[in-house]
Image 1 (cartoon, one colour):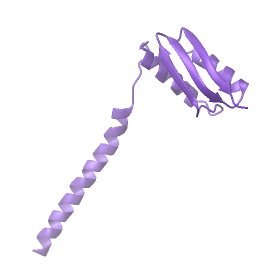
Image 2 (image 1 turned 90 degrees about the horizontal axis):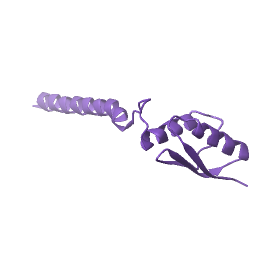
Image 3 (image 1 turned 60 degrees about the horizontal axis):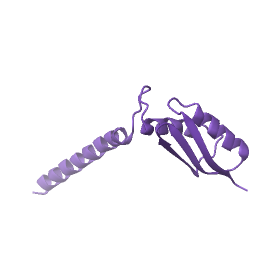
Image 4 (image 1 turned 180 degrees about the horizontal axis):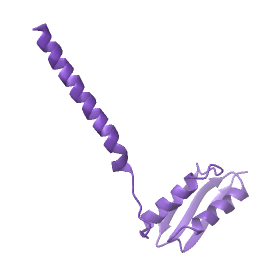
Length: 109
C-alpha cells in the first residue's frame, strides 16, 4: 500500500510541475502585444513610443505617461531635467504614425 501512495503522489507532483512549466512558457507570449510595422492604430503607436523610450537607459521615464489619440501623442508627467524633456519629445515625434506631440512634461525642480 505504501508504494501505491508514493507512486500516486509522484504522479501528481509531476503533473503539477508540468502544468506550471507549461504556464510559465505560455504566459509571457499571451501578455505581450505584438505590433506590426504597418499598424498605425493608436495602441500600436503608443506601444512603439513606450518601447523606444524604455530602450534608452539614459532617460528616466518612471513618471511619464503616454496617450495617443488619432495620431496625436500626449506626453504627461515629470522628468528630471529639460534635456530629457526635449529628448523624449523628439523621440516621440519621430515614431511612425505620430502626427503631433503635445508635451505636458514638467521638469522636476
